[in-house]
Length: 368
Ligand code: SF4
Image (cartoon, rainbow, N blue to C red; front, side, top):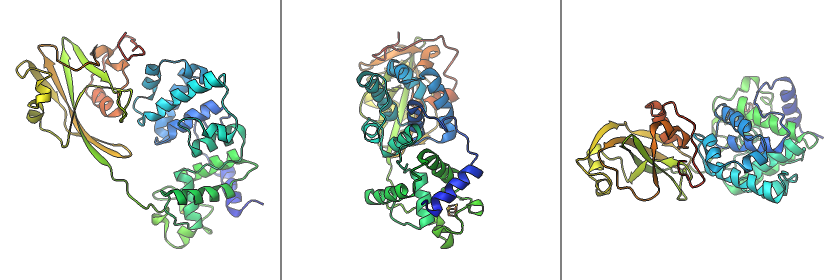
């Protein structure tokens, strides 16, 4: 017999839940997979347009598996957490080659795919195939922790196991897809992290957090993530109407995306300090350039890093002496390279992208 929780949640879902999302009710495992990967670390409002563009360009596994990396990354540009995109490409090609394009249909097989963790596997298994696996994400943990007054730290593996077992117990095994969607929608729209809507909540009379005034402290987090600070100074080098970019290949943030010449330091540098660095002098001769633009200090927070930095646009009289890997690209064609949001937002705000003819980058990342 269903618990009070499950009954009330499904009643709320059938009578009150009006949350709309383009992938809701979707049964195609490929589309569910794409939507879930986009939504990891991304708000629904932001992910919505990306999802629609992605599906329009790559409507099935085959289309994604056979598309060039550059084209796929271009569709991901600005979403962040680019390892998600690399894993998507890897997994699409694996399914295309090893499984003739057929998405696996069991939970263990789905969970074994690269880039798919327990949450995404449960979402695909329940939404596409009606399998009884409960999703456990931040929304689910928050709702369960508050309603049942569970104060195990949600960010520790042992507690994660506890929340997973509880979620699995509460799951309506006859309607796993509906139940999973309902609890995620409930967490996103009613039992929100800040200012939950307790006055319209069907659990108000049952909720332990509400009864004991513990809403703000549940779910408990045991540790605050210490973000590593990084200071990025980008030299936008322009010679003869061409800007110099390269693809990041190291195992670091933004792998496979493009950038300008980067000087990383242990603090933010003044313009004069930066231009006097031996490293910069080795690239551009001190008297052979004009500094035409310096951005203010900019900042972006990633999950484990805090980025600060700026952009310095130098117009050169001589070609720069850059290490290998750089390629010249005109402003008109700059738009075709995929940049991380830190760079992309600066370029957009400063009108670097002019009307561009369509141009592609080949597999090595060179302009063709
Ligand atoms: S009463 Fe408030 S805190 Fe409790 S489940 Fe409902 S919305 Fe969340």
